Length: 151
Image (cartoon, rainbow, N blue to C red; front, side):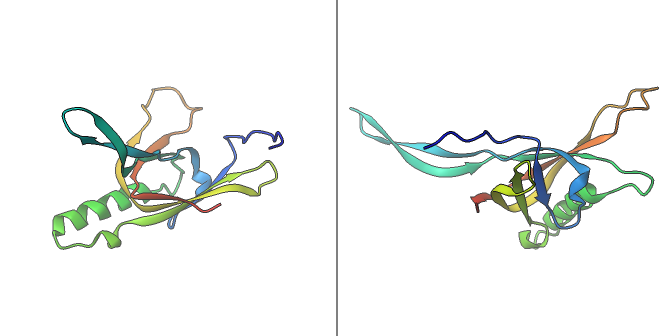
């Protein structure tokens, strides 16, 4: 296979219903791993592929002013409210997300579909008095059911 230039980590696009993708400044993609299942008797142990485990995704986004933005909090509360109803369907708060790695020319080189996402944690950077030049960023941790590589 001929040598090609490596991907650049700073070019991406993310599509989430209800949020301006340009507010998101940093993304940690969910990890995907296959667990090992052990089988055997007293003489030996054999490991075979077990279930797939998907890690969390993390989005760091700028909090805009003057309108503000409550996207993550609304989604978090929606998941919590469905849990409290005890009859609520996960379909009512889970969303699918498209994540694209972009080349320098803006064309998507890799595309993933993150299925069954919901907000499980929202946090903000620490505030420092007198520091007026830094943007306030919010970290949104998403639970992800499945990752599918589309391209």
